[in-house]
Image (cartoon, rainbow, N blue to C red; front, side, top):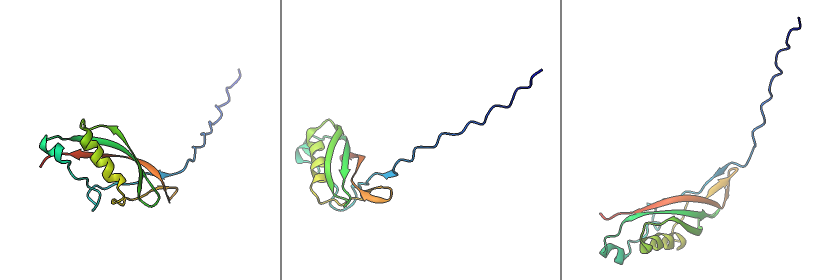
Length: 114
């Protein structure tokens, strides 16, 4: 009778070593980052959450903003987009392999009446 040889060990496939990407950070509590509530939106008591994709440069500046999900009110959406693009908000840049690089990051801004 023939004995079966033990199965050959299976070599694990090497993991793909892609770049280590850390997206930029936008903090709306930092001076110059918080958008002003549009007057018409205040009058109409508009509230909502805007979801945005933001391109943060290697220097922390914002160079592009895309609205992924509207608050339901154009005035609120445009106010946060305009504030981010105004240049008055300095953000933490993203990194690729530890070096500051332009990166896209997702953020949301909640408009609520106090």
